[in-house]
Amino acid sequence: MKFKIGIENKEAEQKLADDFVDNSGIGVHYMDAYLKPFNSKVEGEYEVKVKRKGLKVSLKINGEVGHGLMRRLDVSPDPKIMLQAAISESAKNAGYNYSLENGELWLEKIEG
Image 1: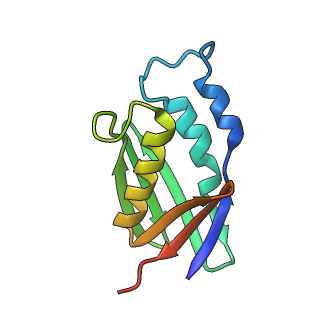
Image 2: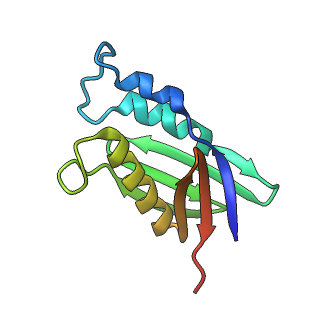
């Protein structure tokens, strides 16, 4: 079953602007702002929580937990691309597929 967990936070991109101070090199302020909509209760059936600690993104869906890492060398130096890969990795490790479709955040349970 596929379900929508929220809408992409486009305002988070302001945290990547040249005039915004972020010495992390991976855009941690951007990550934190982008991940905020993930914390939700969906359709009364799914509870989704996400947190970031350092380079690790942890995604918890109804007790299933998955972790993903921000990988600059393996994925991209672009924080947007790194974060999407880390979210996808954490969802997959929790047993779900993650997708971003037309600004909407979706999860789908991996069957099998």
